[in-house]
Image (cartoon, rainbow, N blue to C red; front, side):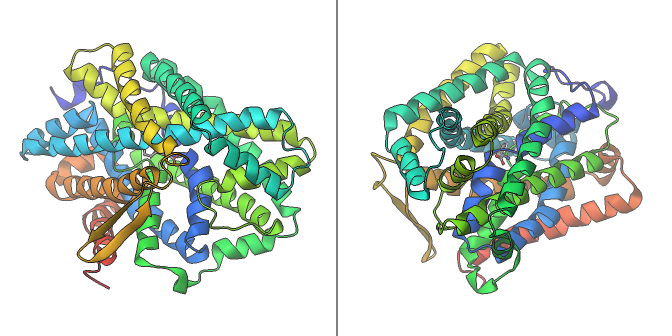
Length: 464
Ligand code: PHE
């Protein structure tokens, strides 16, 4: 197929804005609002945030440009895009494996992502019922504990969320994804700003800021640097083909550099604002910043219980959080669904049903991690270094995908785009200024791959 006539069989975004919204929809999700605050709390604050920001700028943005570029050039699911581009550039067909790594990572991430989205969904109803009005920090905490210790109710919420995701995915790119995100993303941001004002009124705002922005490097371990880097991939939806598959639906004329920049800035802003909302509430109520995955569910309801119109604002907040999770989960499964449609001749509907069922089933392991399987744990030791210790099924999946699979995927994307693709191909596809291209190619060839390797080698103790 000649380059000019390539289009995706799955359709195309109606405009550049549609792509930016959809990709922002993918990027902004539970990662920003649920995960970023709790891992920042667990890893000691400021220094961790700084490493995360550096990873976004030096690794995330260049790799995101590479991913969109590969997707738009290949115009197929990541597996087939990698196969086609490898053939075009005279590289081994085994590059399709990179697409497969992404399919598996997306699948595993969605399985636990949906469980957490289920928590958010259940909080819509809890908040709306006025349950939190005037509740104490202890009361709010025990409401959370009651939820996660009940596997049947977690299963019900997880099931509802998975069904909703697969309904949108089965409707396809333009009708499903594009429409869903156009209004929701801006609305979420407005709500976050309202909550930010609440946090400013707690009297602990500056303490929150200090925790997030004054770096104490003694708190930084090789493990927390890995988590910060892994999170840069996770939050930008990188390293598994989600952004690649969205790039494959991108119209030819769009500037990839500008679009990427806007997406990364929006994503980072949401995470930082979420942190600035949560930590003042943590300190004002004498809570533990390192409380783990329940952190937002144990803090925000206190705010909703105290503030004017808290029932309304809180309910809206959880509704929007569910939508943000929804627009991310769609992109987690899209690479698998697109492949089934392309290679197995399935309709989008049956591809969605099969993928959804398999992900749903895997998710059961994660939801049990908070109750019946809470003491079934694993440890991983590599070269005598303990990589993780006593992790539940949920923690293990999260660590394996976000901190290992996504960075490995990103590393190979950078190597392919930077070293194995002819510069004239990448230059043509990126279509940016000479200077912009030089900066990008150096980041993608040298800075990003070395940074990822150094972080990995540091964790396994090969370099200290
Ligand atoms: N970026 C999403 C979030 O922050 C999660 C995600 C990861 C989505 C990887 C797609 C791919 O919630």
